Image 1 (tube, one colour):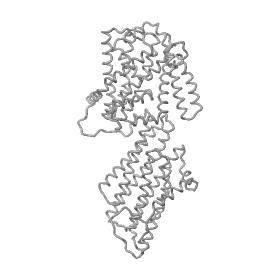
Image 2 (cartoon, rainbow, N blue to C red):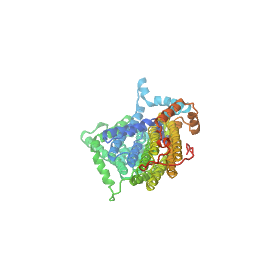
Image 3 (tube, rainbow, N blue to C red):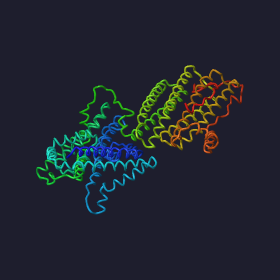
Image 4 (cartoon, rainbow, N blue to C red):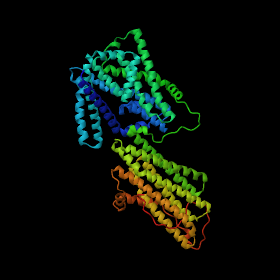
Length: 616
């Protein structure tokens, strides 16, 4: 074997690894939405967790990536340790798909059908189709093109490796080397080291399949190497768990114990039976199909044996990473950076986090409105904590989204990120306005400000409209419902009109002597905050609409809908305007009446100029 064979081998390995990486990432990117749906169906059932791990690994072609995801989910609090065990077992089974795909290259025969089953026959065609799709088609088809290209490159690398390794069959030292690997301990160590370096058991098994072309690989040598490869893939999860919480670290150790215990059981069983029955195949030369069969048999048998003992694996992991003596609660990372290695999953997690942030904003605002009617110190403290949580969410999401935006993302994932980047600031401002409302409510309480029944009725109508627009906005955001988002702007216009009308009616009561000007200051604070909240809801809805159309021109959209060109806008505006109307004001009908004394409420104020904050 010359130095040029070594160069060719290195190039083949490079093409093989690149093709596998390209295909896996393109599969993940193309299946993004479906993958998110699969991962959202997490369950305490080990069987369903097993199928979850199997499907995800088959999609992204990497058991290591699936295991790292499991570690990240446990660290984020999205998955319990016992749930992750089933996913890890499924990942080990799912990784066998690649070896079966590569084993088809060993098919030989004169039949046209048999020849067409061999990937070497049709992978060049896939590569040609793939480059056409990638070069000339839309984003969605580009993703499919990358999958086809990745597979073609992978198979080309496989063939180059096999060709470069063929001369090794004539090298005595190489034959002696594989005879040594028949020693189970040496074989396991060799397989584990190779996989740890490649960070992919699928790639390591593929290289072993390529080595079968030399004729030096016997089943006696292949068995322990494959076992070691399964152990070596645990290194990825162990490294990723560093710095995570204890349950996330335990998840990585479950993966390690599963493969170590499985290796001991499988090798012990095979070598024990061989001593009794003397298997004829044991010293025969292995081929690509044989490697795939051994790899699959190990994972299926190990899973079948250990799945009923998943709680035992959990206890072993807990013993390895014991609970600390302190009573501090387990820390969960809201957005785990481990998920960035699987961008579609990270985008899904960011979207869920944005939804949680929006829900906190909604809760805080409704609580603040309640405080304006009846002061509650405990509720005030809770709103302050919620505002701090929203600020924390905004900081984390902003940083996470910047890191995520540098990844290779699908069109839909890019839209999700853009929507989040354009909206989290508005949600944070809504939370700030909730704090402003609480401060006004405290002022009302401390000064014992009371308002007429008519003023209370006016505010009730306005507050109902504000609650309506907030609920519509949060629901549209959480569900990414563009149709629902189109209903927000007409309601925002109604809120603006109600604010102006409340101010006008307050001035009229002042002139009629039915109210005093000192109450107008707190009323102005309330009205300003309600108006600003509606404006931020409008910003969020417009962002949803515009990003869905791959553009972002707020003024253009608002000018269009307000110009009368949109009949739906006008119809909705009239509908909402009819829903939120004021009752006749008795104080204005009877100017001589004295102000009525009522319970403290959430509002009172004087006129103020409206400020356009659509771009705030």
